[in-house]
Length: 362
Image (cartoon, rainbow, N blue to C red):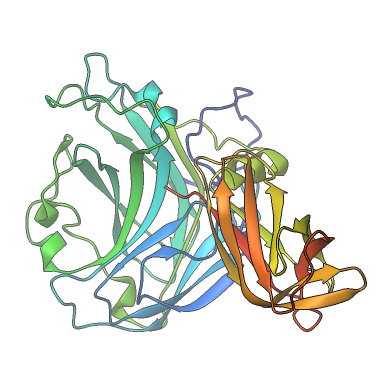
């Protein structure tokens, strides 16, 4: 490992990093969410998902402007808010970064000529801890874990994982499914720590061998953990962290998640029309093609504007149909006898922070 450094000698090559949002610059959902630990999911920074299993501890996840100089202004911060010093066997807290299968073809997993993979990242914490980084390949349940240490200063770790040459299974599929997952283990019970750490080679996954030797972020409610500059590349050498234009990073993130967020009252989502006395429908064109047909989730209050009046909804908005490029959304208004009128779906005047999420996550 080496101390944090600037990118003065960065290679001009682009596309080395298989990680999306490694600089922690994009957080479409929220910049900070508190009281996490009861459920798994995506909460703040794009492309970073938590596995939270049977936890008594709680934490806040945030995008924080405290990154290492010359690498990124931003980092992911984990702030323990409720300690958990009586660790049940099945507990685990794992930060995931999932990489799409067709972006993993350069690794050549499962065939002759498979390549090593090096993962590098900048990390610090409120104290000295030992945590684990696992590369997990879920389609064939293969894994390998490396331990790393933290200090109170930013340190870059460079961990090289062996080639998974031939395990008798198929290679990673060349499609839109989950390929490999980078998994940061920062808390685990005996189910995952009771064996012998699998560190020398990829093997069929045995839970007891996945996180042996790690400390717990929940050992004290004053604990913090910080991460940024995450890079995953082919080969045994960690190159300088690949800097990327923010527009490029945002577009990559929007392949998996997009959010329409109102800024003021009357903000319009899309135009459409009444196809019956109470039924409104319209098309919303996505900002970039998504990985798959998205689902939608809405938060807040919406209305349909017809002529000069807002019409309250009795149902919706809901997804009517979807492609990776656009979705058709329908809603039902409380009034009737409005067939044939054009209008638009909008946030209600009383709710100028309503939003719609379009989700095609791995």
